[in-house]
Amino acid sequence: MYAHSKTRIHYSKVIHISELIVDAVGLFCPEPIVRLGKAIKTIADGETLILRADDPSAKSDVESWAELSGNELVSVVDTDEYVEFLIKRKA
Image (cartoon, rainbow, N blue to C red):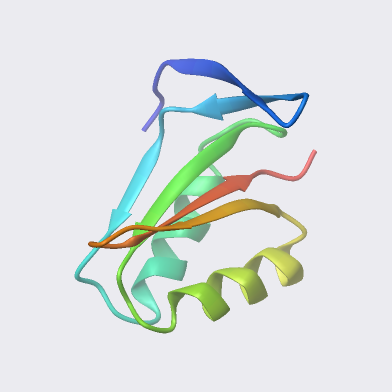
């Protein structure tokens, strides 16, 4: 699950972007959160990963998970096929 990484400039801040993508498209609660919880443990503190999910409850589930776990939900992007979450592991 380790991958190459790149750096993206975002609103005058530099954010380290991981190439780790957790594909939870087609899965329903609680599976996207279960996979997210497992994947976040495979990256270093301060690193990021991307979760893609199309479960209607994914937005509220990921927001709650991030708040409870102390990890940062950096961004949420809606696409035609799924919602993409950028999540930073707590340092």
